[in-house]
Length: 243
Image (cartoon, rainbow, N blue to C red; front, side, top):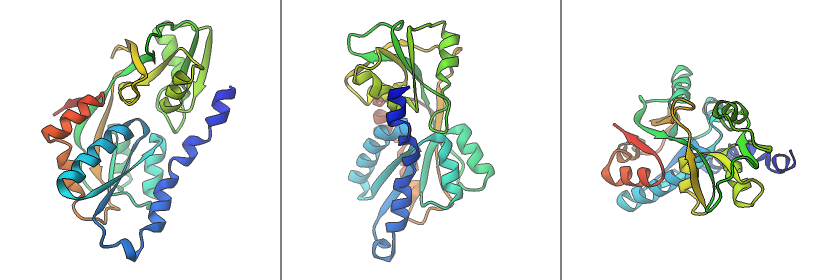
């Protein structure tokens, strides 16, 4: 899997920005008004838009660090500085059991899974890209293709849906499994067909403050996520917002 080999180490590096920030956040920055948010990789474009909107309203800078979902709880257990975590409800449950989040999860946002390609592409029987099960992704691409009854001529394994999108936009694959948020984040991509909920239910996300939060009012940003402005941005980003 040559393409996967080239980019297979990227997920290992996704936790490093949090480490760098933790090391840089010394006394000189103690008075700065900012918040650090860690999130699943696929949510990063949406949360950066939300952070910019919240900053325009409040003056608070929001730094978003995407992380493979399987690495989020290990990061928190190592006391890597994060004020807010936005991830899958199942992972937040793990974080709660480990005692690393400080508030009950707030809000729920569903992220449908789709088969996608670049605009004008519709072939699903040629080269198909899908995530391998790993700490960077909770999608077992080969198993899901089997449930979908798809038998492409070639299957490219990927670290996560971010790499699937890369394989699609570079022409290495004609179709692939993506979250709706991945499609909305790149104007070159479009949905070929949805993955029905009985095949793979939409992934459900929520937000929580962490016990590591040291900056002022992380709950302010979490409350903002339920505002009409934020709901509009979340919807535009491909998430289905649920009360």
